[in-house]
Image (cartoon, rainbow, N blue to C red; front, top):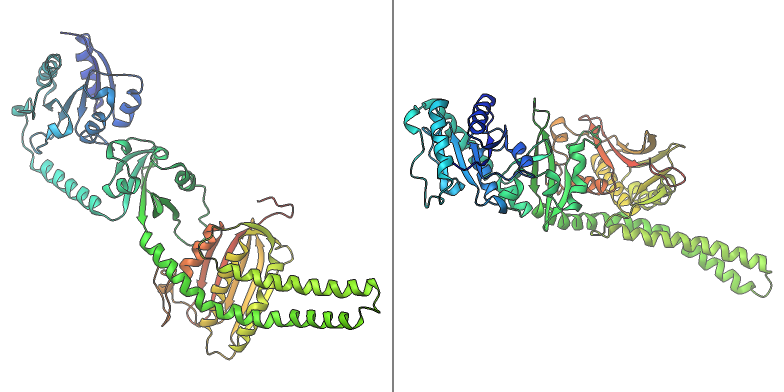
Amino acid sequence: MKKKKILVIDNDREFLQGMTELLEGHGHTTVAVTDVLASLDVLVEYTPEIIFIDLLLPRIGGDDFCRILRNIDYLRTCYIVILSGIAAEQQFDFQVLGANACIAKSPFKIMSEHILEVIRASEGPLPPGNIVEVMGLDSCHFRQVTKDLLSKNKSLKTILESMSQGIIEIYGRRVVYANSRALSFLALPFEKVLGAYIADIFPDHVWNKISSLLEGDRHDDMTEEHYVPVRIHERHILVHLLLVMEQKNCQIMLLSDVTEIRKMESVVEATNLTDKLGYIFSGIRHEIGNPVNSIKVALSVLQKNLATYDRATVAEFLDRSLIEVARIEYLLKALKNYSLFESPDIQRFRIDTFMENFVPLVREDFAKRKVDLKVMCADDARWILADPRALHQVLLNLLTNAADAIDGREDGRIIISIMKSDRWVEIKVDDNGHGISEADQKNLFRPFFTSKKNGTGLGLVIVRKMLRQMHGRINVTSYKGFGATVTIAIPEAEQDGRVF
């Protein structure tokens, strides 16, 4: 009998030892490993002529491994032998798996005869068609409990395969399971995903965004679940990671398709914008009148006295006019806050200066609603990194919610307080409205959830999306009947432009 290079995969170490002694005793080169992941590492440098695979293996099963092997070019002609301890309880189409032989697990003395027999058979042509019979089946006994467990396992797998979410099980940074929905999102075949390193199955731009989930490099001190939005093959996907209890190296990655929700958000975001424009244009009408009037007066005076005024006086009038022009320029730039589909333009700017320009745009309209609006800014809360346009819309949305909550109260009050907190600048919006129930607080960031009669249920969803695009966070605390506090945290920047 010709000497062979053989690989054996079985999680029973005593069985592996017996196999190694038997095969090496007949002169065959043998490598034995306990799971599929270890065997994939071995196959990088070792090319076996025969592979013995236990059907029931941890993490990745022997049936799935057969499918992987038949898609590796240099192993297409390898002779694959399945070792089955459940041959009496479950039928398999071994031809579909790509196996050349199957040996039922039985006392090793009986098995060893079949093992040597299949090695001899591997020297001839591969058997055509289906495997006619399982070798050693007459030495096995049917076990009802095993059949019941296999049936239950099949049912659970069917449930996972029918889920709308993509599910990826990760063990030691490698994929050990992916349901059909996950494969669809990735646009990859089963054989290319199973056993692969998790970083290799995602496009680079996606992995750069989600890698922090596995590394634990995220801020979990705000009370919200952590999802990372990505775009994979024209679909909007939310990626979420779950840790498996009592299994340190095992994690479950959930992929949720929110493409249709994103489309709906865009529509509602546009509707939200229309609702908020009243505040903006009311403020602009009020604010733009003063500088225009000042410029008109200054130019009229200059026109009448141009021949008599000296250069210094003329320059003074021009400087006043330029200051007012700059004010108008800011107001016009504020309209750019509502460009819905731009990527965030992260800038370094002073939050106190930003608020000085923002508050006058809404103060008059809030006064008409009998809402007392106050702003307090701590001296050490200065420089932040954010998109001023997006922050403008975030604050406008939060103030609108606060105003709605105190609608009808004679003593309605909103306080905006800004303070430094570690490496963040926190902006708190407090109101003395009717508050939010504990049950409603759990659903605040759920799309389409609203307690307002004419609400869309996407206002805070959009706010959180904008803050995440700016690497910010949001938290809401409230007690029914005692108002609410919404806290947003924006990354702080040092005065020289460095980021903490």
